[in-house]
Image (cartoon, rainbow over all chains, first blue to last red; front, side, top):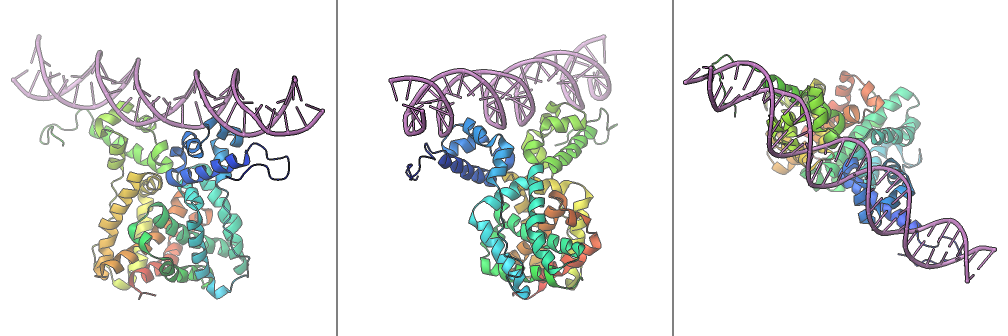
Length: 194
Length: 194
DNA sequence: ACTGTTGGCCAACGCTCGTTGACCTCGTGG
DNA sequence: CCACGAGGTCAACGAGCGTTGGCCAACAGT
C-alpha cells in the first residue's frame, strides 16, 4: 500500500503491512467461518503470504485469534448520555459497531463454539458493559442482572441479524430496530424490578 | 425405512438400542462442541461402538446431525393461550425446552458456524414460530417482523445462558427471567408498532 | 444342516490441519 | 565490501479427520 521510506530508517521491508494484512484476513475468516474452519492456511492465502509467517508473527492460532479480535465496544463514558435515553442510544451504538467490520461477528461465531472465545466474551461483558450499568445501579447484583438482560437482547439481535441472518431480522432498518429494542433496553437498565 | 418384523419377536440383536445411543451421544457432543469438533469418532466412542456403524446408520456426518437435531418446539396450538399472557407463556415454554435436553443448545452452537445448521434454524423459525405469530397478525410483514424480534430475545437468552454461560444469566432463576422477558415478548407480539 | 441377513469390528484410504525448520534474499550498518 | 538480520518461501512432519470395504459371528428361515 503505502510506499516504504517515511523519514526514518526504521520500518524497512514492510512487516507492519503484512501484519495488518494478516489480521484483516483473520478477522474476515473468523467472522465468516468460526474458529475451526478458519484455517491458518486460508488466512495466509487471503493475506498473500505463507502460512509460516502467521506462526512467526502470532505464535499459534490462539494467538492470532487474540490479536485479530481485540474488541473495544467504545461505550460512552458513564454519564455522557441522559439516563432516560440510554436504551435507544445503546441499541443504535451496537448496531453501528456490528456493521463497522466483522469483529463482533467473529467474536460471536467463535464464542459459540470455542472455550477461549466464550471466555473473551465474558471478559468484555465484565470489563466494558458492566461498568456502564454499575454507574446507574450501585448494588452489584442489580447491576449484573440488568447488564446480563441487556446483553441477552443485544447479542440476540447480533445473532439473528448478522450470524444466522434470519431474513426478517436482516430486512429491518436501523431506525426500526432502535424503535423496537430501545424501550426494551431502557426497561432492563432503568425500570424498577418487576 | 424399517422393513424387518413388526409382529415378530422384535428387538432381537439390539439395533434400535444402538441407534438411539448414537443419537444421544451425538446430541451431547454437538451441544458441547459444535459441528466441527464433534467428531464421529468421539460420538462413536461415547456410544460404545465403532465409527463405521455411525456411517452405516446415518450415511454421513450431515445425516447424523439431521437425525440427532430434529427440533420440535412443541409450541401451543394458536389460540390455546390467552393473548394477553402469551409473552410470559412463551418465555416459560422456551426455558423449559432449553433445559429439557441439549437439543436446542446443539442447534444454536451448530447454527452459529455451520451453513446447514443456520438453514435449519431458519426453517424452524418459519415453520414453527411464525405460524403462531401469524395467528395474531394476519399482515405477513407485521408477523415476520414481530416473530423475528421475539426470536432475537429468546435466542439471545439461550445464547447468554446456555451457550456462553454468562454467570449472571446462569444465576437467574426461571421466575425472574419470565418476569423480565415476559413483558418484552408481550410487547413485541401484541403492542402497537412503536 | 445350510444359508442369507444382520450387527458389529478392524484396518486402511486420502485429505487437511497446525506447526516446524531449513533455506533464500536483500537492504543496511560497519 | 561484507556480514547480518529481518522478511519471506518451501517442504515436510505427525496427527486427526470423514469415510470405505472387507471380515467375523450369530441368529432366522428354509
